[in-house]
Image 1 (tube, rainbow, N blue to C red):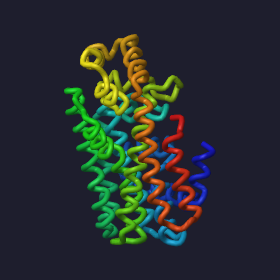
Image 2: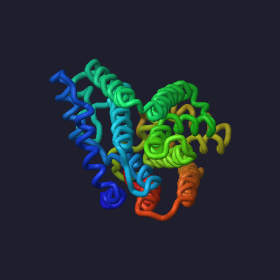
Image 3: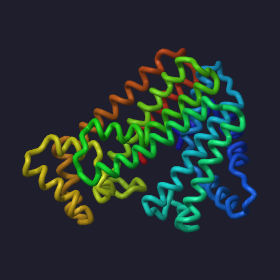
Length: 325
């Protein structure tokens, strides 16, 4: 966690104030809702997304943020939290960051309604203050995330994903939200400037690297809070597997597809698939692609003058590809 504290350092004051504003943005007249949102807020993660918002805004605005920046960070965190609550229902997951998920404690019906509530809170926060430019950014992100998830489900059934389609899926599913964080940060202080698009692109590249890193964990030996082989069990086509399918013989390809489709619950068979993907160079290929996205993101930052905020964003990009979980 030391590196996360380092990244946070230049925006720690803003992050503390954000915590208060974020709690306030969740309040409701319904006691049950307040109990659930209190539970959510007290089990928060590293809060990388608000950090992206504040670091971008401070980088572009001589170290200053404004109320729009705080609203942008709150909106993104409300929307992100809503998607996590819904994801746990979709994935039938009982745990989230080591704690019980909302659906495990309060059942699916309540979890779906809480997700809807958080989503509407996020959208209303923008509307109530006339931040329609920020609302547009976040609405596009929500649409893309839903499309990305559905595209993945549609393609997983057929196991015929090309590398291009895989990039489309992760761009929409994961990268679009980090892209929204950075463009929101830029838009909050420099609306209608070219920086909004530059930082959208920067966030997207970070998100692409982030998701490939996540996919690589599936092939790891270490205990990383996520059992290895889980993507194969769920028939998710990730970059190492796509590379393997495109670079093996017809016989090996049939065996791979058969393994993923019909033997994905067989631990021994899943292990054999992981070994095969490693041997054929699937992991090395995915790592090289991940580093390519990282380097492109870093090169976008070079056009801005050196500052603590730029240093933190560079550190964030490196952390994305070097993290252990």
